[in-house]
Image (tube, rainbow, N blue to C red; front, side, top):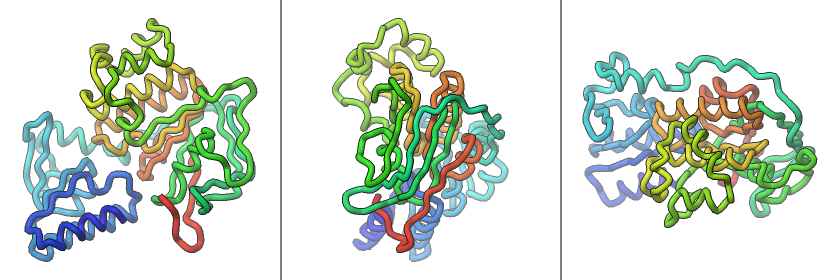
Length: 318
């Protein structure tokens, strides 16, 4: 809805040029297609459209000309049909190959001990029930995908499992002897998870984490230790999301809710981050609940998938 309103507002003033900055991030396929249709209407009615996106499917749907940038430099440009079907630059080839549909299938892991169970669970926001009658089990080392249309309650379900919001009905049971810090969340918007005015090293220190535990994890996540002297706004989105992973893992989680952790990342960084997350989940016996609107990503990364559907009236809260 917000994207549609923004496009309508831009055109209401008879704007000759519309700039769309990542217009499909966080949307399911149906709503992404709807936004693409609205954007195409801009050019069909005589307007000019400049779209900034990591979404190659959107770029293909919009057509026109494509300019591929890397570190502020143009590495390739041409028609969408030519660039996406016969790229000339190595970087463009890498971007296309990094799309989830090209990933290899994950080797399924044997699940470990149960760490969390939900029985007869109903979740909602305010007075509106988004999902109900859910019976779910999560086991150590298992990657579980969570899919469904925008607004169906995926974030609400994860927050309920974490204890951040109360169940509307039913109950959530955690394995005995595990405190709330063993159940962690990776946010869709990494900057929202960090205090903007504190250096990252100060944020780590606030959790009273032993300093010698951080360097090996930073190395595993391919993070420069110098980043810890910066503020959250001074590092890239991919680096900040990996720092979010480091912070969560240093608390020795048994359950990690990753709420669309790659929605703001380019395909290459997305592939790298998902490989890190799923590998760390297996190596550290963490139950990972992974939310994504990308069916190919969920299908390739998860051991099994939970799908939520809209209620019969087709309405849901965000």
